[in-house]
Image (tube, rainbow, N blue to C red; front, side, top):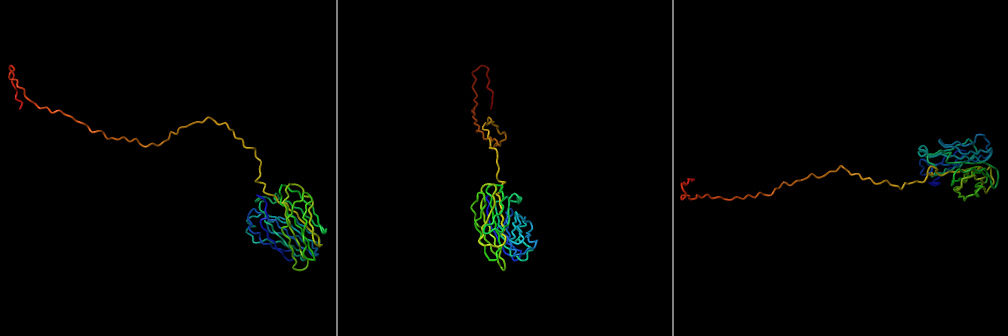
Length: 293
């Protein structure tokens, strides 16, 4: 099954907290990847990292001292996730605004370990207009790459463009460009996707921003197709020599009972009537007729 960004959901929150509605049609075995970004607005507290929902694994956590917090999370959905209404993240950073997005991905190894579905890399810098970060090595062909860039900016909306990996750069499609500024410093985050056809090192990845702001954070995630449906087998060999046929009579059979017709031909009787007549033997010597009346 090919990988697909099947549905998504996003949300915003003041300070370091954000709640995101569950992506539509979430089913057990679907993979979810979440990108959560907060603007610190100069908050240098040591404990600013996001904490995530139960069952989710933190893939990356970028917490610069005075810049953009970016964390990446993943989970293979079980009944606990499909039963949920939404998912929440929190941070102790008191001076930040937060935005986040969840992607529901189908075609990853159902119920598999997250470690064999996903690789990730991340980093932060103050480069402008283009920030560059260390890349990763994909394990399988046709990996789905998700590249995320996040930047806080006092001046408002930042546009992201020119998504690049140094080696064999594929064609990128920007999926989302999020902006949230209820008051104070804005948080900006964008995500783009591409298919990396051949397994191997991506080299550094980079993103260009339209506006200077605080430290820029970035993350790159590689997601793999199900590998359990691919196998190599020896060719099937069929022996074309057939044994001589053997015929076996079936000795079990059911026959109608023998019916004998008992009709016999009618008997024919014939008789000859005999009429007795006395013969006159008076002329014979010493013959005496006996009376037979």
